Image 1 (cartoon, helix red, strand yellow):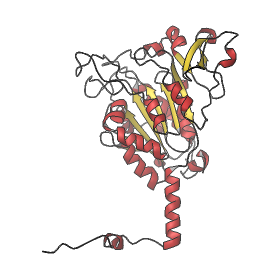
Image 2 (cartoon, helix red, strand yellow):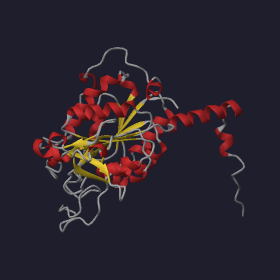
Image 3 (tube, one colour):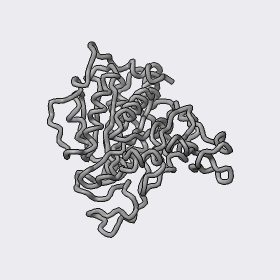
Length: 352
């Protein structure tokens, strides 16, 4: 299986050194003042030059929602497509044009409601594309209805007595769909966001990055527990491959596996239990521990929320396998004849 560098070699390199300015389009950015999308856009525009790829060979595909205006603001090729279908369109593009670096920008409503089917199949196929899922736990574009990630009891315009739906955990969903790369980051943490984007870009196959993104109009403060400096120390678990999973003031808390149930739980670190603190292994072929980590976060308070790369494993890349099949078919049978295929033995004439 080719690694990420081999796959990137299929995409033409930029002829000259690029800067953030090269990836800014001439379109006026039109989000609500203070929206977290601005921070994500700046991070992506600032990161793109690191790829060293020709702008003409980078594509951003989006669905419908506030985040889906993203392609307008990138000085690359792009498509503002239809609701929930960005992964399907991007799959066709990445599979047929392996000389392109294909990115999907979507939101929690676009990806997990009408687009849920397309998302899980892109993940299981392991198409070579990068999916940025902006999660603000609300429908922003349509003015504040509850979304598939809104917490139970959420009061919104569409749930005046509180939401009854159990929310999706996007990271858990992705791991359950056999995604080969799954990560979570936060819009306001530019350094962390960029490091996760870098890891996603380096990964061969589908990379899903959930980005907690604040909607200051319809769901302001949804992630305050993870952003407030004092509260974040006890709320954010920063995952680093090969490092013990510790957090809190002076790294006083850690994650262990309960010997009785096999579940993961948070403990105060002591001399007696320090040797039991889990060491994060993002490359573990089994998704079991990564899934268990994704379940640590409380859906209401977001306490004990892991961020970083939860899973990064090698799997065959769909577009590479498809190209190999097509090459083999041509070698064995020559180029196909579409007219013959359409008028083949599986057609019939209706008479009467």
